[in-house]
Image (cartoon, rainbow, N blue to C red; front, side, top):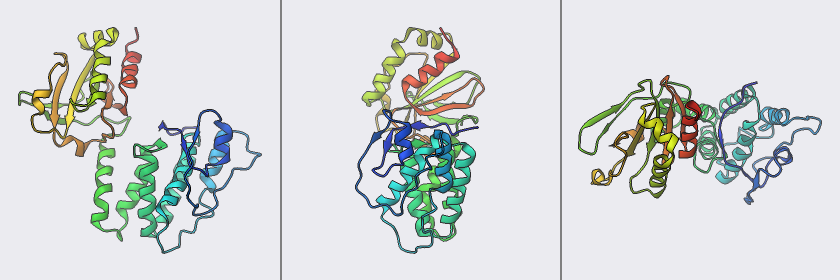
Length: 306
């Protein structure tokens, strides 16, 4: 069965499901958050033997005790906690069960705009933000699409999520990488388009220590630099939302790197970290996004092993 691919930060709420702790002993780190739950969280039956079966059961029954008809707003911290516990087993559950569960949840929330707003905020926290347990764009998109379709929510409420929906939709892994325009340090216009070459794009700030460290890692890896020198790997360093005088700071980059800045790209692409690495395959499809320099280099070395 298919499962969602995701980046996982091992964090659990104080009321995390027993099955997760039992099957991931030694890998998960409990984090105590003192909030009263909005309902009693379910625990999968003991007779279910595998982690996948238990996770599937949680997907099917997690919201059984939730009252979706209540009109008053809930404690947002409690909603966030419930969402954290709910989303964590998604990494082990079958994709079809996750999709069915989330579709049903969003449908129930669509009848209560107050809860839809709260749960979308919670989904952002657990599936999209830098504090998320897991990043699963396909699941988070379901919340965003449900939110945008709701006619009872104001356009001002939707603006934030409309931007996220656009960014994620433009940069979905497995689909064609987006083209974009930028300006070089000498003022010439430039543009990136998938060109049939394995490409790594670093979105960063020349003043960022982590960005300089990432640059050093790429420059000092002999095999990796040989791939760049041979034209097998294309490297771009692009600064989103550049500050005045950025041109003078874009120095010391290898001559075969493409360097520039764009004041519109942050609104177009799903860039969540600094630095953030995007990897595009030779077929022009986005292989990965918002990953580290080490992960990006591993993908290049996998494509062209030593």
